[in-house]
Image (cartoon, rainbow, N blue to C red; front, side, top):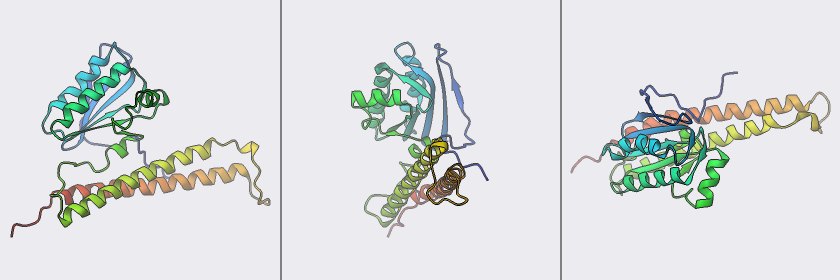
Length: 235
């Protein structure tokens, strides 16, 4: 069976720029997956000692007028102090001044707990997967509001985002099924049915569905971007 398409680290030919941090507990890298979009990945722990390194990594993209969407990928961050959270909020405010956006990717319970406790999870537009945060990569190319193209572009953009989120959900369900203890289960159908084989088949089916949905979303995203460049002809 083909390996399911990963949703957490979409492949990109864009060059990744490794950024230095004086604190070895934090590794930073930056890359542009699409025009006007920059992803900054933080791997490790973020606290008062290295918050300036995070700020320095986000600053160039935040200050660049060409950046319409900045994604801070914390999917491999295991600790986020309030000092790091304040960096994200400052960057969000800077981007908002010119109509650009910040999205944050976070999955670690410790990181998410800090956001929940401080009430900043919704404020920071947090997404569980990088692919979800990158859905609809071209926020600045949408047609003028009120046009039929704008409505169609918005509808397709929502469809891509919802499909990506659904694919991520199927993937998480597959992992939960795989984690079930087959030795403690009994298949009520009897006969040749075996809990271990049944669970394996379920997980395989869920991953196949995840793969199909993720592939569909990735194929549709460029179509949404291309549609966003179209404009109604002048009369």
